[in-house]
Length: 148
Ligand SMILES: O=c1ccn([C@H]2C[C@H](O)[C@@H](COP(=O)(O)OP(=O)(O)OP(=O)(O)O)O2)c(=O)[nH]1
Ligand SMILES: [Mg+2]
Image 1 (cartoon, rainbow, N blue to C red):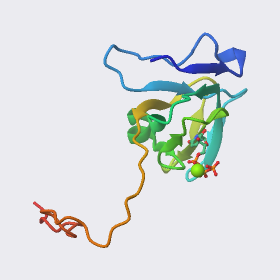
Image 2: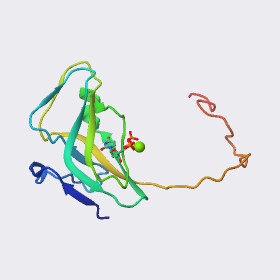
Image 3: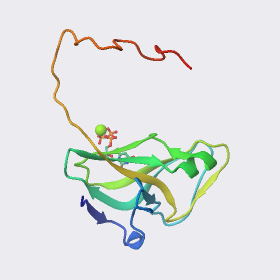
């Protein structure tokens, strides 16, 4: 599948997102910033990527997810937990970087900070009903099947 990509900042043109291995699901997004940004514990900053995509098809969306190494080792995750990119969004991809850790983190210019995953989406119409066709689970949830 081809996705239209706009390079908004030419400094990123030689470091475009790509699949690092043949089986990769994520495309790493880099911090398109002029100088390093030090995030204090608890601090959140909206970081530009220098890129825009236009999926142009409501059957797809893109998710921005944390990188596991940064998240686990350095507490660098996303201020919105997950970023959802609509198929009609044409603006710059922005990453809300949150230092949820207890030590300062220095984000370097053009460092890989998060990852983009393209996912299928099913838009639906609602069928308004009074009763659902009974299911095995019914209304049970939140641990109704037990813990272990
Ligand atoms: O991490 C993110 C999340 C969103 N977006 C962009 C793409 C998305 O299509 C748009 C709107 O996102 P969302 O619908 O999640 O935010 P909202 O607060 O509901 O804003 P809006 O009123 O513009 O829909 O913002 C990003 O660039 N990065
Ligand atoms: Mg919205």
